[in-house]
Image (cartoon, rainbow over all chains, first blue to last red; front, top):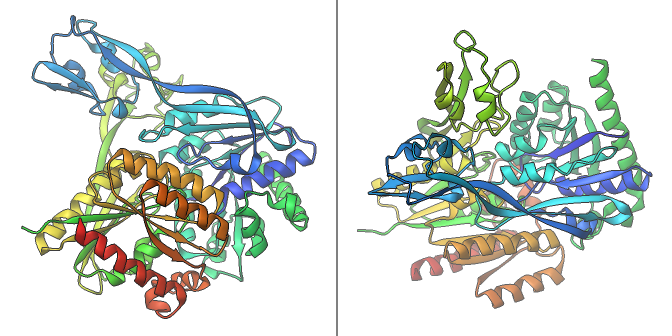
Length: 290
Length: 294
């Protein structure tokens, strides 16, 4: 199992994406694999709580923003009328910049007739990396509070892919563009769900995002407590394989609430994760044979 | 004129119970408009089972580039100016990578790029069984601009509230602290944070509190699933005292909340006498007095 990228998504938050992802990372590392864990939930990164990395490097994450040379600006309004994100607004004889709205496309600098716009850099968060438990290579992004755009930071987390490693990529909840940015270059997507109507509703949307991107998809059912027929019907109708099932278990919840890894504290779950890893391999091979 | 107050429920971490609590509170507050601002994973409509969709509106925001290969001279300017690697060597625009900046459209010397508005979702106004209004949205899978769709949902809710003279808008917010959360928070009068007593819950709680403070929004807090780890409940209480956050109480873990959801009901509807329901009624009373003082 080398050089594969496994992304974890869910749609609904709190179904156990991070729990399943960090435990799989730990299991694979325990099985002598080279593992890299990348936390792309940059709004609320949590993987570090369980994998306990020693952070060795911290890099500010920067995006491009326009800087206006007031001497050269003739307040013609070309920049503000072209900007699709309303990041530049012409008010009287002044161009105001709203950096949080800027997507860093550079169009304003290119079209300014008097070359009054240069591009500068702005920090929106940071990328931290280091070694976690069992020598797992660890990377996560932390978005500064008040920054709206997670996308560019997610991309900077992913600049740290290392060759020869199995990558475990933790996606944010939801089904919008940050999820797309996270899973777009994955080899397969693991959807972590739970047997509830809320989770099923959001799972369906998340699956359609991954299907649009032509990703092989497998499902992990977390907190399973007796059959939830609507979920089973949906999975079989859409030929979505169940890669693993984790039962509702107070011990799991209790270890989670202490920041512990399940398979480290509750070895009976080693079998679940062994089967899970094998099923991921099968999912990927099916794609090769297709 | 009556002043409309907006109460938003947020959490930072997903799955702490925002929507279950929001659903239960809709049962207790009178004369309000309900807005689900989790536009890419909306769930409140599942337990509110709205009676009738009164209006459905299209949300078109943002444009995407498309190259007309008939007009394209393959000069490559578009590929040079695109910062998102959205244009292939064959001059096909990948709609997933395209952020809609228009650089290729404005700078193509052959004017071969079309740049058209995209449908990115819908939003709906519904009536509920108690003859109130409920606004929610569905962002199309994988789309951008969720923050702007949130703004549309809130505007719609305000219009309904004004029309009917309602004084409260109850907003169910999305998880995280990014664009749609900021859009759900700004300009509200009170943010009710639902957290859980776990290290991840506490970690994420601090970031959402910081965000609310950043926008100068008053914060109140509820601990859900409070019996999972009493130590962390204590940590959260102390944190609230330190930060001057109104601590409204605890809701114990209750399996009936999931059962209620499966029956498409709120917990107050399904099991009005369980401990969780009693806790929620108590929280509602405290919320009401905070809102009255605002």
